[in-house]
Length: 245
Ligand SMILES: [Zn+2]
Image (tube, rainbow, N blue to C red; front, side, top):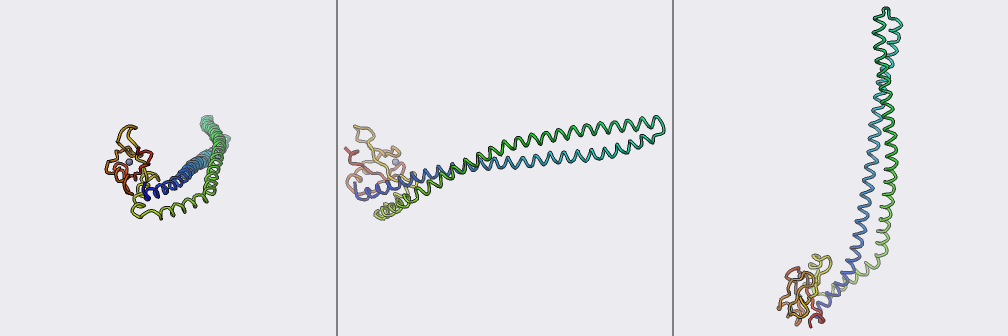
């Protein structure tokens, strides 16, 4: 294997280690995002309780006003009843009085119903608050895990990055450019091993995408320090001596 490909393999190795760390970090960040999203969901639900309670309270206040108005009316009807001069007048006032009293009783029942609804709401809210608090704890835990991961890998990551830059300096610019581009397309893996399509055959293919490697490409790899890109996936091909027997 030529010096350029050897240098690229060293680069690939460092890239691979960096990618592993980055993947691990990304998965932890995803976890944090998901858990925080759950907390937001519970927060929203808790906010809705306040609105629902307010609606019930307004209903109760409305009914209270109606009851007060009716009570004033009843007071007045009682006076009218005492002042009534005929049986007929008495009966009419009494009917009105009874109707209003029945209305007050109905409204008082309604108030109790609304109060019951507020009580139910409080129960639901307590359960919701508990779920919210649990979600907060879970989010805090994964955030801690992420922070610990970041601080525990910081030194190693900086060293790998430094090593990577040093290794990259040793590679010719054009080869480095092609490697970087291929690596971007294959999640950090810019190189692909050339493998035998079958143990006894003479056909070779790309270890990443299985595309056939041409004789011309093989000759380039065997005899020169050439950069050969796979025609299928664009990875830079390398041929291990042990795979070329
Ligand atoms: Zn390929």
